[in-house]
Length: 489
Image (cartoon, rainbow, N blue to C red; front, side, top):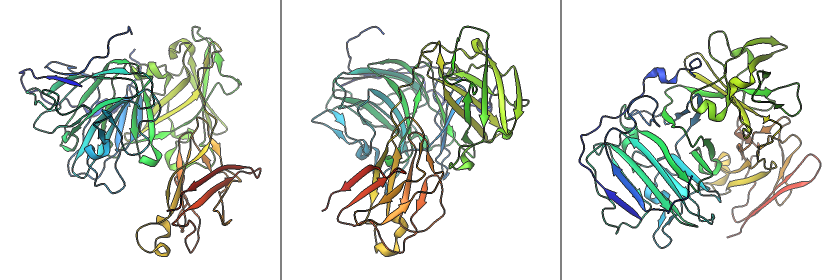
């Protein structure tokens, strides 16, 4: 339930970030509480200046809907969510269920995790900034409190609140542009909201900062297609920033921390040296999305290294020295400068190439010998099937497809794997085709150019029966690792 109070304040100007905020810079160096009703508090002076929060902006009239998500030195290239036809409003997508007072959104968004989620939804007219907390599958509630600014009433409005509209003042307008929101939800429930309209205005910015997160394991930003969602875990202690990409990209680096050690174990409180190797892209990946070691220039651009928490706070270690050998770049850092703690799971390396390309890579670490990575065994799953595209099937073979995903935490090499239907028609996955953790691809029936996200069977007629079939995957050892039947109508 929500309690909305409007305070009369001066209209605040949208916060905007300068171009230099995207530069990679050198080093600078819960108690239990009752779950309250969601409270909207309007006020001025929140988060004034600097990187005090998350900035959201889109140039109107632009077809580029890709964003760069930034938290300190960490950057991610992200896309808005949308339904397949692009005709579903954010209210229809969120699908608030009044009887259960919870959301029932499209896709695999509210999985059985205690998460606070943030994403952009692109509807038929303009985009929305969406907050969605909790899950029907989680047996406890939680609280999520954020502050943000720039949501001027001139630009849009709250199109959705995850509460009954009969609640007093539920859709009360406010006079100021700054706001603080506290959501509370109970066991097996959700809470959240969607602010519509502001993201498609020229030079419009929103600032978001987490204040309180209780009963929440992760704060995540969701991106991509509903059948192949990417989830970027954010630091719960730091603000984030989102801006239009405008030609900027984020590429991956193949990072190997302590390449001469088997377990990446070290004492984080010493001045010992940690060697970080940047190696050529792995076999089978789309190399346009990766950087080669020779692309990095530590002499002209910072190559920041450290724990995720440290980098999220815009702090990092710098290499004491670096060398190149046999196509690999070796950088040497001081352990204490990287600010790892005994609960760190990954070490991150971030840098920049020119003015438009950011670089991010990571590898597991075991500070003090502690293994903090909760890995799931790599497993291939089916996330979507399109056996009956609109129109005559034989004329739309590339619209007939099966979508697969690596639903685990480790890379999955599909060399020697075969995809079959119930009749035994077989497609051999190319040698060297590797899926990163949580990455996916579509297998199209027709012909086309292979990429890391799309493979083509090369058939001249449909393979998947419209009224039902079996999708079977067999590994290189002739073991059936996946069998997925879609029901007959």
